[in-house]
Amino acid sequence: MGNPFYFQEVPVDAPFCDREDELRELQSYAEARANVVLYSPRRYGKTSLAKRVQKQLADRGAITVFADLFGVASTEDAAARLAKAIFSVTHSKEPLWKTALRVMQSFRPVLKPEADGSVTLSVEPSSASKSGMALLHDTMESLGAFIKATKKLVHITLDEFQEIVTLKESLQIEAAMRTSIQQQQAAFFFVGSRRRVILGIFNERQRPFFQSAINYRLPCLPADALTEFIAKQFSAGKKKCSQAAARILVASTGCHPYYSQKLAFFVYECPGAVTGETVAAGMDKLMQSDRPVFEAILQGLSPQQRLLLQAIAKEPTSQMLAGDYIRKHRFGSVGGVQHSSRQLEDLDLIEKNATTGCWELVDPILSLWLKKQAETKV
Image (cartoon, rainbow, N blue to C red; front, top):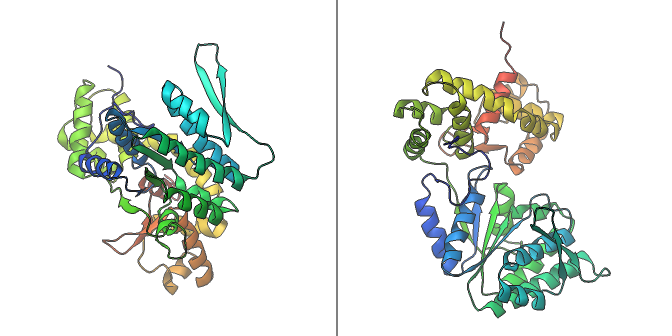
């Protein structure tokens, strides 16, 4: 058997830690045709969870559509991704494929045979003269016709839905989609990792999607369940890992789902049984692996934002605007700190701990990496 741990998206048929309650609740909401905002920090397993729910629904005869909006570049791009998702899921099911071809009027599918015998699918607008908003209106109308024609439960996941706010027509997009969705007998999951942004879409009174979906927070994994899962996976891979060693590993990542799997992956590659030393060695490899990601995060920030992020990593505080804290970290003005903190919160890089009341980094490994960057061995 190879390494039993994943640090990419966990396949729907792979072992999954805990989440039984979430799977049951989300499936029940979907079957009731309720719309859900599924939110958490990045890499908590939202996408994997949503796809597992869709697999369970599909096994019961539902039609499941998954569209990823991460990095969406325009209104036309958003419409195209939704249309492509519908054509993709129906391509291998002839009756549904014919229905999709008949009712999806805004885009047409383009099938391209590959050398290995597979087929790739893309879409192109049916009319070159239509604007992005017109294409979105037509796509949502076509989606409604498709849902009505299938006479089955249709479940649609829009992953990283908050990305639409980056588009200049974002409020028009929200209004167009909300108007169409409220007329459709389908269930939607709106998945997002920039929590402040996606919750704003659905909970700010002036926004079109106000109170149109159930807010569903995906929490961190329970320490005991994660410890048990990690130890069991090591055992499945024929590598010795005591409960105590698994607990050290889990504590090292703050029970973070993605980082626990990735750290366990590197520790599994270390010779011998799992110990505190192999966990430390694995952590070094993890941080080295994710260094380009962390550097890219810093490069995308202003100098003031980087300074504040580094300060909170080194010294979490409940008094971010206190004079002593500002002077100690050489922030300059209170207004500058307020502006930077709002930006960092919108990017889901910092949050206020509900238990301690302290501002801290959302990503525990980024926090460790920043602290290490400020230290030099002598």
